[in-house]
Structure formats: structure tokens, C-alpha cells
Amino acid sequence: MPTTGSIEEQRRDACVTRETILKVARRRFSSCGYADVTLRDIAADADVSAALVVKYFGSKEDLFAQASGFEHDAERLLDCDLPHLGEHLVRTLLDYHERTQGDPLVRAVFTSSRPAGGRFRDNFESQLVTRLADRLDGPRARLRAELVCSHLMGLGAARLVLRTRAISAEPAEELVALTAPLIQRWIDGPL
Image (cartoon, rainbow, N blue to C red; front, side, top):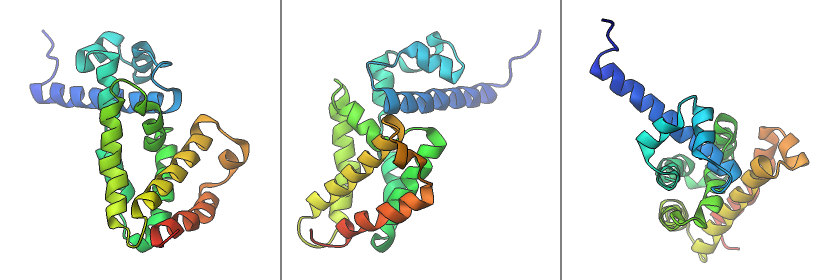
């Protein structure tokens, strides 16, 4: 009788499958929104059965809640010193777009109106906006942090959801050169 692999190999395969499903779900929810995504869509994109998606995550709402986690994305976005943070934010976000065809900030927009969106919104606030505001010197730090995030959300929405012609056609390095100085001004000082 053929063996199906060691328990450790099975666990490793299960972890890879689970992460693949999450990655697909993040991309789908980011670009389509909750209502337009089905478990079958996610399963097809992940090359697994819908039953396996249910086995790992339960319901669509449960998968959505897990796919909407923000901590890792916030860590990557904020992992830079303040004098270079504007460029880092734009470059990191554009890299994320290319690698995943998704955007964690656009995901925040789609997620916040869902029943499980309150938790994601709270995580987004505490893990990104508040952490950024706490790092900023000078007056109106919270407003400046929110402006930074809103500008980045708009960039992601224009590229990945609306697919506007000029922004979508612009090379990443040009978008960094054009956008990062504007964001850096909000980071550096008063409005």
C-alpha cells in the first residue's frame, strides 16, 4: 500500500494550501469586494475544492475575517525611518501590487462595511494609522497620518480597482518619484 507521506509532510502541505487560499482570498476581496466573491471563486483560483476551503476556514465570513488581518502588512509598510518613510510606503505598496495584485489599504475600504469589518477597521486604526501618528512630530499628527493612508488608498484604488489609464500606465519608479515627496511632506511636518 503506498504511503501518503509523513505527518510532517502532510502538515507542511496543509500549511502551504492554507496560505495559498488566504493569499487568493486577500486578492479577491481586495479587488472585488465581499459581495462579489464566492468560496468557489477562491477555491478555483487556489486550485483546491470549495469543500477544502470550508474545511480550513469554515464560512465565507470566517475566511473574510482571517484574510482581512492587517498586522503583517502594517509591519512592512512602517519598517523605515521617518526621513525616508514616504518613499518606502509608496515603493512597498507598489511592490505589493505587483506581487499579489492586491492592496491591503484598498482591502480596508472593502472590509470596513462588512459585518466582520469592525474588527478589521479597529486593527487598521491601531496597527497602521495610530502607530504612524505616534511616530510623527509636530501638530495634527493624527490628521497627517490619516492623510498619508488616504493618499495611499487612493493610489491603490486607481491602479487595481478603477485601473485608471495614466496611473496604471505609469512605471513604478515614476509613481514613486511623483508621489513619495507629497506623502513625505505630511510625514515631516505641519500642514
